Image (tube, rainbow, N blue to C red; front, top):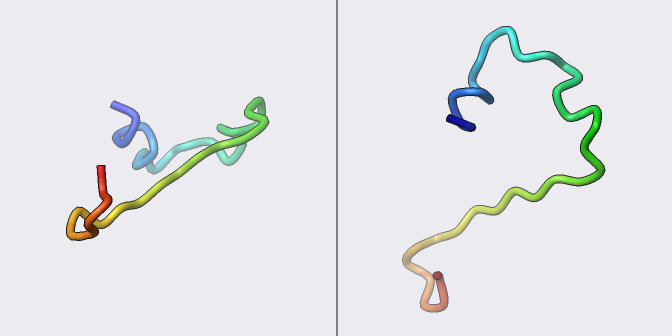
Amino acid sequence: EFWKYLLQRNLSTQWLEGVCYAVFGLGDSGYQKYN
């Protein structure tokens, strides 16, 4: 659901206006300590 929301063409440019912070992480499952 969230990913579909982010992919909307008409997503408001102010969709993060009320958020004080955001966290986005990427990982590599080939890395030994990847969870």
